[in-house]
Length: 203
Image 1 (cartoon, rainbow, N blue to C red):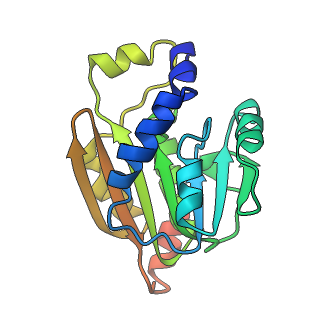
Image 2: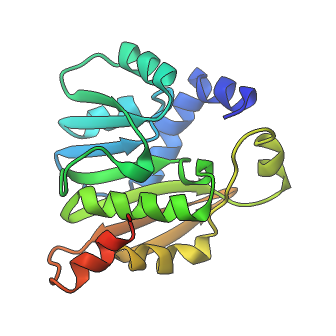
């Protein structure tokens, strides 16, 4: 992230917007279960809200400095914080009841890493587990905001095919001004033929 992103994402304003407007919309009607994986937790704008919804949250963050700040900010027995890469998740298969990624996928360096991340999320979800994401649209404003930062927008229209390829079903995409939410579910039951196809996307 660039300096502007770091500044904005660390503000109380962004945390309030995330708690009051963004997450209630992204998670509308969601069944999160008992253990949520928060991918790309950053400064923890979403973490506090998630801890109110489920007994256990595992927050993954790539930047160790941000992870240290997140851990210091949210100290409770229901939270586990781990430094790691979303494209190679350091968790066993079927570890989580749901996963949430807020403004994460466009920070991947390329489409391949995005697809590997989607496949990894599918792998660590339990059968029937749900994935929720929020992303921003491509456009000059967002490109300018990501000056000297990684910006690989994921087009909403590509979400269905890409999520289906790694083993998700019941995929939906909904829009708001400037962004969109994605929800998908890992099949409750998978055939032996389907499992290797999803796993191969992580190779």
